Image (cartoon, rainbow, N blue to C red; front, side, top):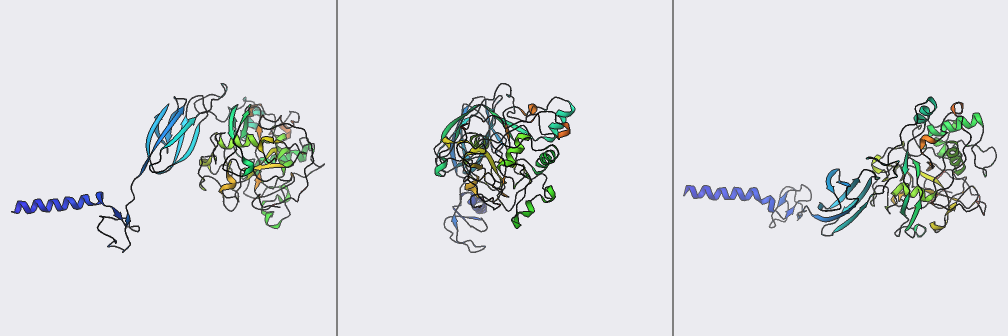
Length: 445
């Protein structure tokens, strides 16, 4: 009899230990588990809810090339040509890499019971750029004093290889449609926007040497100093010709299109076309955002003010280009057309230039890769708009970006337009509009 009692008591204890594993309900407050016969939590009286399960969803990943290695949420998962996984429901981040190919990044969501098929297509790099971590910042220039100084002063650039890329969106605004494929001969793009410190070097040089790099359509003796008369914009204005205190590593703002074009030419570069900008921002894969298809305020600066460049490395584009969503929107070289396939170079005369990228004062919709800001006067200045540059040659070949006393190269005009936009001649003057310094570019005057 005692043996029987102990055995029965052991069964009760064992059942009590196993009960949580079979529990069907849980308290939404304390998350304690209970069997299906209990309706209220004895600890806080909350009505119990069905217990959340660790649901998973099937994910199939098709990989090209098959030599690529796949990591999901930072954990290696093997390689191609095909992977089949069961992943927990929720958000995930995929990364793929292979020697000789540009790295691939993608955010995706797993839904319980819904199979998901992902296609991972890595873009080959030109033979000159192929390497295990390409595309990378180009090699340092030749070790001579002038080139070494250029390497310290100029910002890094990333190579976007020649190829055919998917642009536009079928889910966005009418002027983002249709999805289209665009060819480019390849180019180099600044990793981040031009900073106040970099723009200061440009101003110091043209004050000393004159306006040798200004656009032909620019008004004579135009002042390139970032400034606006709106009282609330004064904290971003360059009073006394100097940048605001402690903003040297912030993107320069309150610059109009002619300011941006003049800096780009001075640096031996040019402004990106609209299509080049979008290729660099989304990898030419139809992504909604540089990092994937789901917006996250943790991956870009959408807040109360601009911050230093590169502050959100997790939001890098598939090429490693930073700050392509949020922080500041950016001037491009393309004039606005309702159908992006009709895009022409602004060139200082035709139409009104397009601004891309969203800003610190935007919401998720304005930060999408395919979002096109309404066309602006080239004299528009805003605390939300800056710029970055592109080049048709590697950074080591650029002659500028140096103080004038070290710069012996002749003036460099804007480079030839990339294949992403037409080079149609100017046909109409840009209508003059009142410069603005408002928050959201879409609402600014």
